[in-house]
Length: 358
Image 1 (cartoon, rainbow, N blue to C red):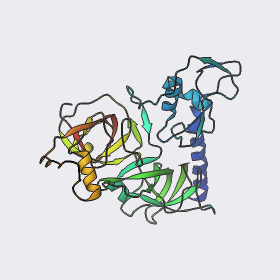
Image 2 (cartoon, helix red, strand yellow):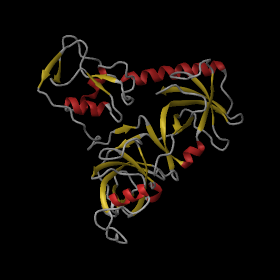
Image 3 (tube, helix red, strand yellow):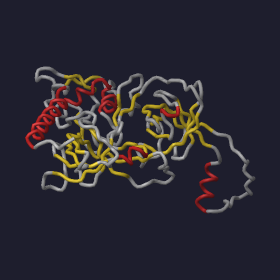
Image 4 (cartoon, one colour):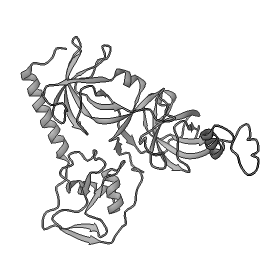
């Protein structure tokens, strides 16, 4: 495929930008008319400061008691062009600025879990997990047609993929940056990556190994050298689907690497659809051993001195269930699990069991 001429490219660019602008704003609801008062619980503050993991759905359910009112909250925040993309430290208005409000009984803010009982998608905004094949096939931003160092929304970039990769014209690729490995993290099946934005591939010349990309979303300034790859970023909460086989897996990453995963957080395991996992399968996170003794002895590098001699530990401790989780995103070799019930914080390296019939 040859590179598009400049006339064609600009036509394509202008059309693409116009479409993007229409798509991002078409569904945004209008604020209430001046003479139409909205009903909001009296204890709802004017603003909410976004924390890591927040979504408009969760924020609305927490303050309003009804997650389906999230378009109403969105209408108070015209600067949010895409409701699936909100970021830590952003201040989200919870009340209209014109003050047309009827206060109702307070609800009290509460943190809520994912969209249980629905099949609506939840999007990964900050982090994603790429398997080894996707990492090897990832392309690069190699330049831009503007003089500035950082590239942002609507900028044109030059991209390149490996010679044996034929990229898909018109596809939106996720721009990412690799992260430093964490303690206990396994990188055999893939890596957790930091999401930086999205680029739509406009064209690609396989002979020259060069293509044009349109920046359609940027969380931060995009730089030359940043990588891009197709990344599935949707999680789906569905009813439990009993497994048709028993498999042992290992927790290899957590969606929020700075936190010890617990209830309502996402972890990744090293089995996927190639191993028979389907959306909705239940996983049992299990661990064995004397946690305190193992941790303490590991830190000091010898046996612990106690007031009485410690008995010799058994050869094998029983495996204990420390958390339950459900498959919310299944890839060929990896699965994202939403933790439903966690007695203890889940660690990378913990065993995750799929049990037949459960």
